[in-house]
Amino acid sequence: MLQNGILQKRRCKPLDTLNQIRKRIDTYDRELIQLFEKRMEEVLQVLSFKKEHKMPIFQKEREEQVLKKAAENIQNPLFEAEAREFFEAIMRISRKLQAKLLFPYNIVLIGFMGAGKSAVGKELSLLLEMELIDIDAYIEREIQMTIADLFERYGEDYFRDREEEAVEKISKKKNCIISCGGGVVLREKNIANLKKSGKVIFLEAKAETIYSRIHDDTTRPLLKGHMTVEGIQKKLEQRESYYQRAADFVISTDHRTEKEIAQEIISLLCEGSFAVK
Image 1 (cartoon, rainbow, N blue to C red):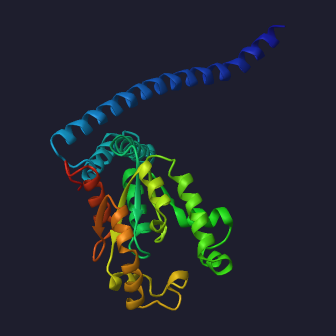
Image 2 (cartoon, one colour):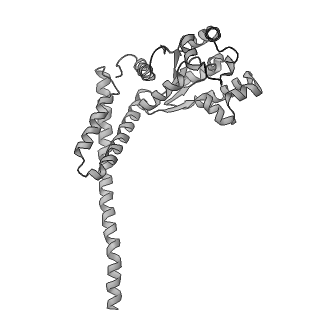
Image 3 (tube, rainbow, N blue to C red):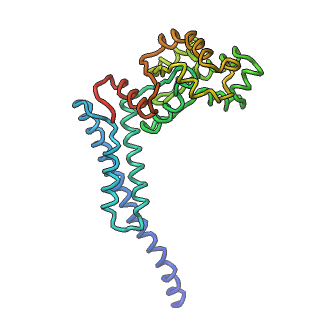
């Protein structure tokens, strides 16, 4: 009996130790969430201050300072990489929170093919931690067919019907970056839906710029047999008035990087009250 009691105590000891460790972890977790909540509240205060004093909202140099301090403060080098990853996640969450408050609507990118909608959309999504939805890619996933094949098999009208359905569904989302196909403006219903919960940005580019970007692309059905500067210019002239009527803002993408364009979009959407650096 005595031996059984000793064995039972020996078996319990590791479990008791594990439970004690877990209790300490639970305590640390409670402290972490309390500190996290306080930190987010301070982030909101910083956002308010920056808006009031017309300061840049998203500052890459500030994020680097935070990461540098985290590396300096870590005592156990074993956790250095994880500490950086932890704070990088906090920075992303902070940007996402600020973007959600600044832009409680969709940012809609329109423009001719090759104007930079996809590339700028990706840059905005990274900077603002907002979901990026490419309407053409969405349609391709839904119908399990490329846009080029869809045009070839069913024609443009069929594609425009599928595009209209996709726009109507996607427009019901909020706080997203929506990259539209070049012809989305051809139907007024599309623009009406996109404007219900979004600000529309027309990315403008010259025919020469567009040609330099897409002249090797064989997946553009509307330019099949017309992949020339003159062919692109003709299409641009046909659609220019549609883009202009739909746009809340117009931004030129000629000779500019995706980052520069994304920064200007944020600045314009913030009504010029503060700039982006």
